[in-house]
Amino acid sequence: MRYGGDTSCVSVEGGDGSWLVLDAGTGIRRLGGAIPPDLRRLDLLLTHFHLDHIVGLGFFDPLFRTDLEVHIWGPESSSLDLRSRLSRYLSPPLFPVFVRDWQCRFELHGVTELDHFRAGSFEVDVAPVCHPGSTVGYRVSAGRTALTYLPDHEPALGTGRVPETSEWTSGFDLARDADLLIHDAQYTSEEYAERVGYGHSSVEHVLQFASAVGAQRLVPFHHDPDHSDEDLDAIYEKVDSEALPFDLDPAREGAEFQLG
Image (tube, rainbow, N blue to C red; front, side, top):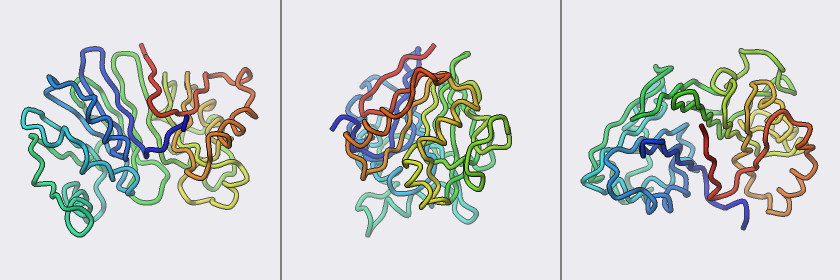
């Protein structure tokens, strides 16, 4: 499997050795083994609480390290704070281990009322984005370098295409001039036509979005689980990459990008 089979999880390592993790899908289980043993702080940013983005939490070994400080950031709902939302999954009958059983020193931070915060050595901008339920996107910056993470996002909802200059478009400010844009690209155009409002983008729409915001590199993300490697190859072979105003790298498990 060349593109990967795990659900959403991306790690960011700062130049000073600091670590930040975006979402806690099944990919976070293997990531746990790569966290340096001498790391003393880890920040985990959750975009929303659909199961494919939090299902790996209970299997993330660093949460059981007594020498590690873990800060978890994520959206609250209108009726539940962050701990209550996490506890709905991390408790029986869905899972045998409770949040209170984590052995790390952890702090939970709701981001619903925030538009900016500092996570370790990173500056983070956060904003609600178009996806069912309480969902946010993140822009992670270090100096002049910025990465934008919009894994579940439908900026073309109600328009049929992404406006070229409309700053009111969902996620626009988070992604403006990003060095690296990781963005939902679950559907083909034909598939999207039957799934408008599901909260995900077509490949065509994410290409439009990346061009509109002036991204330097686009990583189409959140591939449809029904798309095989061969399907994804065929989808991206149809894209005229040389005509795009940005570099295009469809997400592959284990792919690494150096920024700055």
